[in-house]
Length: 116
Image (cartoon, rainbow, N blue to C red; front, top):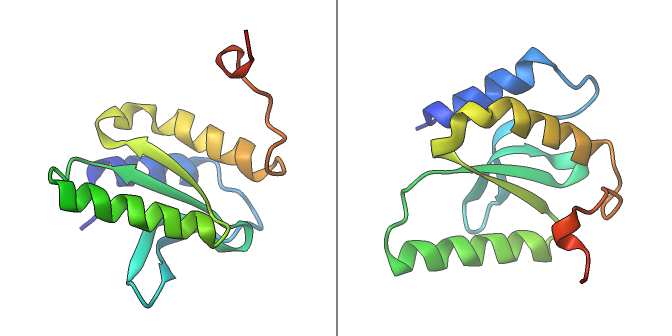
């Protein structure tokens, strides 16, 4: 079941499409575990997850940790967004564009990233 926040992100991405990019919703990245991302650009190994409040237990949290660790081991970059902030979907879409158009590690760092 797709959340309202996922639909907001889909709408934001559709308003300013990225020609030539292979956006897939509900992308199954690990068939053996049946793990899927909410959105993915498989050719770039860039995924997006819109996080709700579905996992309120230790087991759910542990499962998410295992999923994202497996994704990183497979070379995926995962952007995670908070569903309750769905009004920020246009900002999320802009960040996705920036990440897609920049090689890994090339985005400028923020002040909080610099050593003091």
